[in-house]
Length: 232
Image (cartoon, rainbow, N blue to C red; front, side):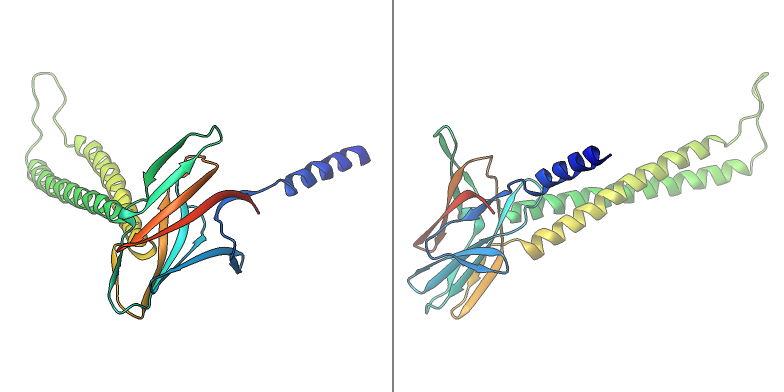
């Protein structure tokens, strides 16, 4: 019994002590705020900082804060940001940072499709109910030796209708929730006015690379943030 207990505790100990790695921004002057590693770059009156966030779906997420203390408005657009990736075997590639406005547009199309399908189903259902109502007022018709025709088939149609409505409604709710997420959490293309700032999330596909460089262009200013796969 003691041996079994010791083995169990040992296994639990190994599980607890397992190393945890995440993608984090890297710099010499890094700061830590509530467990988040932050790197900052200052160029020509524009101040950018990047920190890691919790992953979302298949994306590695970072929070980007852009402060404008210049005299002119500056534009920040995730669609113009690029991630340069380096792999264990030395190979490299590049990929654009996710454009959340494209995701919002996808959800708009999904919402429009579901709403139109629900509208069509309801219209068809109402028409069917009218037909069945009229049919039920008629006497049963006997054809040859067969039993009188009944409207029991409407029960099957109702089950199919309910299942389709349920599926479409679930898709509609999910699409609206996803749209709301991208609109509220993600960094969208924004003009940052003097003495203002933005602070939202950007989404990247790391593809299991060992390191990367995030390139952010704000007007003509170029900011590069190294990212490494680092043990906590």
